[in-house]
Length: 497
Image (cartoon, rainbow, N blue to C red; front, side, top):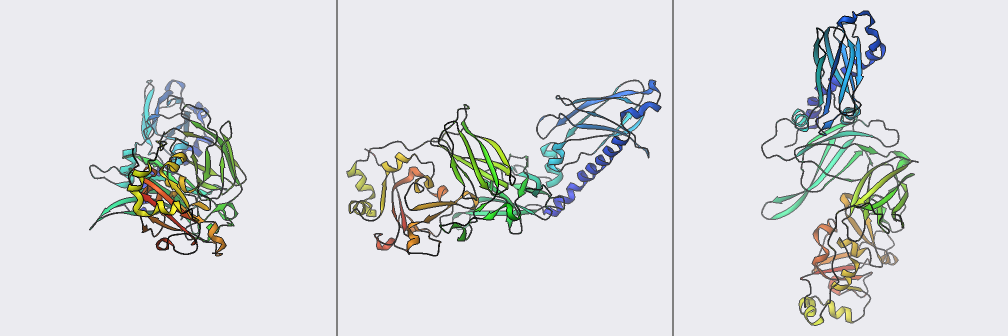
């Protein structure tokens, strides 16, 4: 069971107090810097040295501000900055009892403060002390409590801010969603959606996020929201993920000629932000003709000869940029966009994926395998439908089912939440002027209630044939449902020799 967000914030207060204490010490350091040690006897001055380590990232922490502050009312302070190897030296520290701590942007980004250490300086021997950002298990234990053996879930934390001003949005929610396998009387999937509310500083933390499977996440504040992004959660670890939410004119609804903005669950948006960059493979070679899109908008584009691309009129905030190229698995990159500004990214497509090989279909065997559907007879009659055989599909080199459907004239695929698509029939609008024309979808003769999760349900290699009817005319009577047409998908074994 997930801890209540309020309990998480209460557990975090110890670290937050430490951060506030260090901020106060930093103010004292600015007023009384290292040079203020002139009143002490030079023979009693020593050097405080040590290292600062980032246990969360597993490497030394460079450019951290380390402070040695005298205990007492005067709070005199000495400071130094860590080198690339995390080491530091602070000379001129007199004898006495001190509080030692450090500050670094990574602590601010995580919302973490580190409890200061006590150090006693005496004699002529240099004093040494080692400091560290807590490890993932330590942070997870502080915020989530003791976990059960074998628990591979993770902690996700970060800040939620206004996309353009950067102001923290207290009361906003980070919403994480994933699919779970549920076993009751049968086996089915169920989508879990867990919201966690940010505190007044815009900071949130969520325990118990599963580390296996695809996690979709976004931030919300009332009716305003970031785009959905794909989150990869480390096993038994801590993931830092900030969100920015576009507000007001930073993201407005798109006036969509096909009526997509009018369909429940679809909110296409645009704004004045832009993203530019280049698409490369794992060897650094530019990829020409890669297809790019920003989820939640109607903006698409393709890369040029040098792999470069530019997408404009985008909503600001945290968004997901997707790149697709034949022979590679689709890749999504999280981008934080700002109104009237252009972000630059490099998209690397590295995961090769199998595409359907060209096949030779032998009519006699093919007929025996799918003739029961009536597909071959309807195809021969040259009716008003469009017909795609296994060989036709192989020529498209699809990665997902939607890669096939987007090639069909008269169909339009609109990206929706959770990285799904809704299928629209543009031709059906001539007989259905409401602007929400969604064709009926059948798989092996069974009517699907909706097309959510279609790509995960049907893989291109499982498809034997597809037939598409833009309107009611020409569709088989048993598959004619309304004015928006029908899509019939037939699965079966791959035709053989």
